[in-house]
Image (cartoon, rainbow, N blue to C red; front, side, top):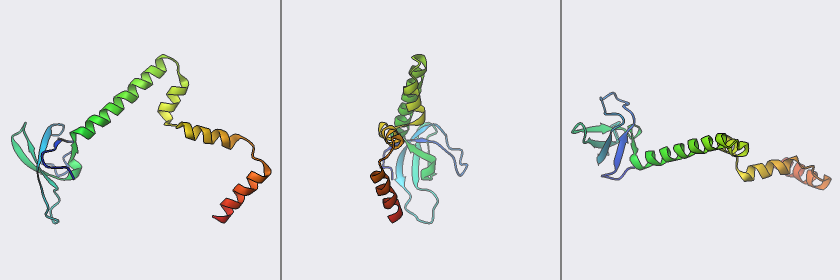
Length: 127
């Protein structure tokens, strides 16, 4: 639940109330009535009105800013990898492969000794 006074951005208009989508506002109250579809009362300074909105129609401005930063950073890394012909960096960014996953794949490719193979078969059979 968003705290009172939290600066939010209106990201949707589920009930078609002519909300100013993309504009910011502030949470000024909670709607605690369980029979109501709305969760918050939001004040929009641009329109000078208050709106009852469900939680799916609003998002914290801080969270949206963080997501935009991550997206921009990812795009910049992709551009850098393409400009420098760094295939390993490009694959890492696009596939999201971790170094641990790569190590596991490499260890899986190595042939197992007979004792290790039997141990793994027994473990899987027991589960």
